[in-house]
Image (cartoon, rainbow, N blue to C red; front, side, top):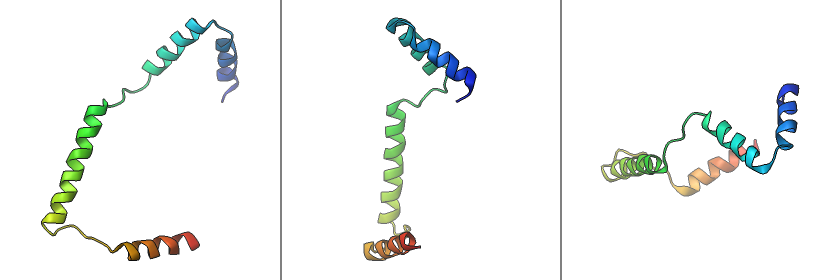
Length: 78
């Protein structure tokens, strides 16, 4: 954290709660908007359906759990 940011934070922490809450909201709004949860859920449903379809039509590459587990353990040991 820069010294300027630290100074601003220290000053902000001395403000009354209501003013600190206002600052929090104003800072939060300054960031890129987050995708609404409904859009995220829809994207996951689409991805799950795509993966299920690839399993059903035989185009998915599937691996046995024991093989995956062995590979993971080998990676951890390195």
